[in-house]
Picture 1 (cartoon, one colour):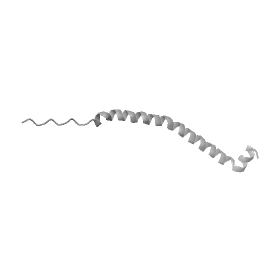
Picture 2 (picture 1 turned 180 degrees about the horizontal axis):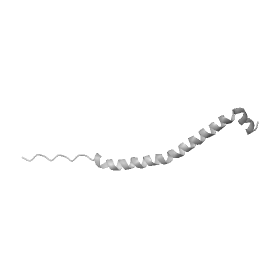
Picture 3 (picture 1 turned 90 degrees about the vertical axis):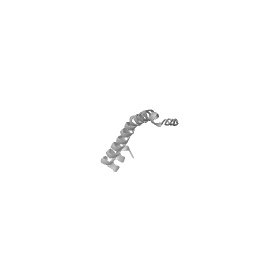
Picture 4 (picture 1 turned 60 degrees about the vertical axis):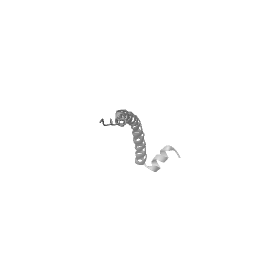
Amino acid sequence: MSTTDLIQSAGFLAILFALLLTLLVALLRLAALPLAGAVLVLDAAAAVAARPLTLPAPAPKEARP
């Protein structure tokens, strides 16, 4: 059975839909890579920005008589 026979038996639209779906998934996965990198950079920047907020509070000075 050749490729042409398989396409004819499955239906041209079904094969076209499967190929388009595969292309869409591949494009979405490629788009996810830079977005994941941007999230890592933003997370690191947020950690640096929040670092001064996590310092312990200074000890209160004792009252003088």
